[in-house]
Length: 144
Image 1 (cartoon, rainbow, N blue to C red):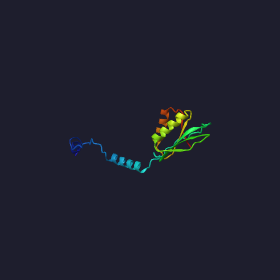
Image 2: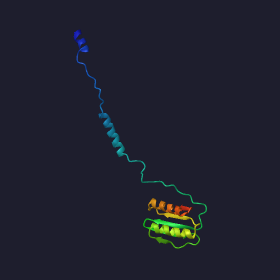
Image 3: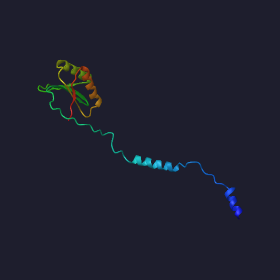
Image 4: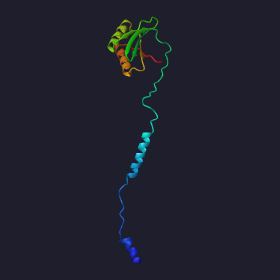
């Protein structure tokens, strides 16, 4: 009886160890994490942008050229002590031409751009760029 016991330890069937990794539990865990991240909404929405608020200057200019940019209309006027009538302009090249004429008449006047919140940001930036190219150093944005 002792000989059968020793033979099973030495020369009997030996168990082979698996050298493979079982990946099924890892796949299960990854699927659960994927479902959790898909079900939980993000805490901040990329559509909401918190814009900084601007402080009012202590002394606003007396006279300035006001450019009003609305989604379907461009307007230009000279405001201040003696306000002139608001002129509606058809397109941006006509607005730039009128702004150049006003700047040639009175080169010391600053420009104030009032952009509606529904206007593309690019349109306001292009107007600022055009005013700077004309040599207007004082270009401001109207804020609430």
